[in-house]
Image (cartoon, rainbow, N blue to C red; front, side):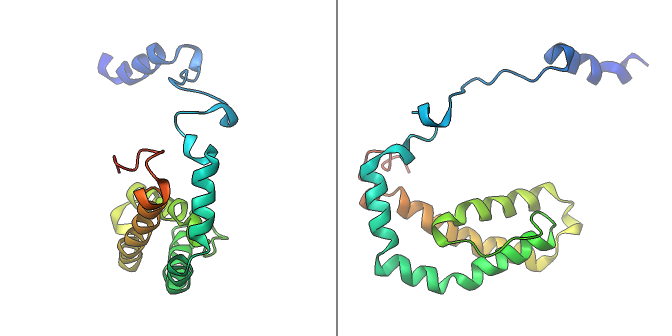
Length: 148
């Protein structure tokens, strides 16, 4: 049947000669002023460094160590990262995101129920960190905190 060849024909038209699509937006990291501009702002970096040394952040880093450890355990269990360890709190979003993507990409029956519970717990922690990093008290309006 001709329908059997439709997906291959579509892909051939979208990606002739099996080439990769051209990115809509592409800049070298040091020239990127749209997608990752916030990490190039010295004032924001200074406020983050100050916050990372604050009592609030240091308390949360201590209290959240067990959660961050369970996320690392889950990443190992799902075979996302066999060497996963609890990451520092300021880097936690990437670990949470990796776990979230792994769970969503997995067959639901292959994900242990305790791993799904870890995701829910980790989501609250990741949201707290990111909301504080880019909220008005630290970000100061320079990176769009009013939109967050």
